[in-house]
Amino acid sequence: QLEDALLRAGVPYRIVGGTKFFDRMEIRDVMGYLKAVVNPCDVISLKRIINTPKRSIGGTTVERVELVARDRGITFEEALRLAVDDDQHRSGARTAIAGFIALMDELRSMQGDLRDIIEMIVAKTALIEALEAERTDEATGRADNIREFFGVVAEFAENHEAPDLPAFMEWLALRTDLDTLAEGDEFVTLMTVHTAKGLEYPVVFVAGLEESIFPHQNSIFATDGGGLEEERRLAYVAITRAR
Image (cartoon, rainbow, N blue to C red; front, side):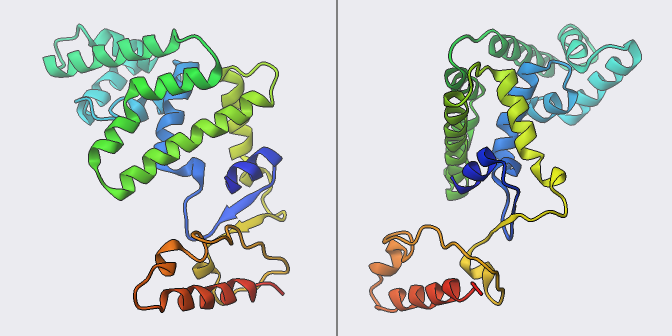
């Protein structure tokens, strides 16, 4: 939410000891689908999503398709469409490619509000479904990040007159390029309290200083009674980072 607010306000920021929201793998996967929907010639995005989630289209198949595209002077997607009937590819790969092409055609035909379209795209691609099937805390967190992305979409739609998918992708590109545009300028540094240890800044904002977040609920209910003391020590570290 903090990143989203900074992005919307056009404020450059850095994350120390963590990955930026739009640099996270699962968000890049969603954006890969959205870019490929908007621009069928975007070979980088198509290659990213062609086997995400897994659909039995391996690296060798992709290389062969690329070779055909180069030799014939056609786009990667056009070469994919030809590959469906190409005996050079094994039947399983041809079936998977046909399924992928059908999926992309369906995604491009979707109608409705921007958020509805993007939620339908994510549902059809089964990105969240695949993560939840992993049944790990990390995968659950990544699925939650995708749901958080829907909030970014909703805010964009509320604040723009014609919120369609191409406009949203253009807006995202401008926002996520802030780092390169503002190189050398001042920026907000986002970090955990642990990461900030030993550092000082003129101004520090401690976010989430509310019961069950900081102090964390695990510390409040800790049986040994030392959990809350550890959170107090950590709060002292946070407060003393400011000059």
